Image (cartoon, rainbow, N blue to C red; front, top):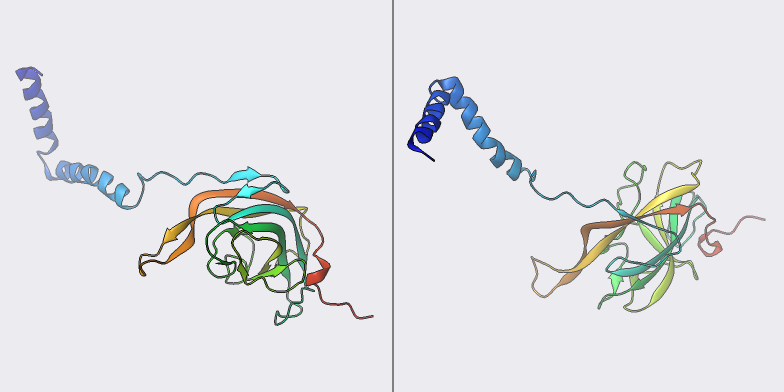
Length: 211
């Protein structure tokens, strides 16, 4: 830049900061990138969930999942589960793809229902039952495939819609920061949405009707 150009630029800057209101404005403008960056404003937005179809196998990291249907029932019966509680259930097939057993209700972050659906305090399934026996799954063993029912308590869905969205978060085998040598599955920003059609609950998870 020529010397006259430099003088012009310096003169413009001097005029801008000549009075205290202009200095305040300049200071605020300089702070904007700092504030935005501190708030994560320059971070990449999470990608939107990808849509998958019921009956199609999906790799979520921890599991190979084949989602099927959903149901709503107040007749779910499995041991100590509260009778008469309304449950929304998702019927899915899962295969543990990891090296260790997975507690589907404790250490797993794969499955979620829509945020606007009134549930209890559990974001992930409160109970997971085996569809073949109606008993709690407990731990999904490595390499083993299970037909399961994921269960959430709800006060809604008295009139269930024809479809309900199940979100399947993609997870990664992640090392614990607080305990060396320990790993667990943690959700990533990637996710899959599947519109589950309304169906019937497996008979194995229902209480027997009075004759």
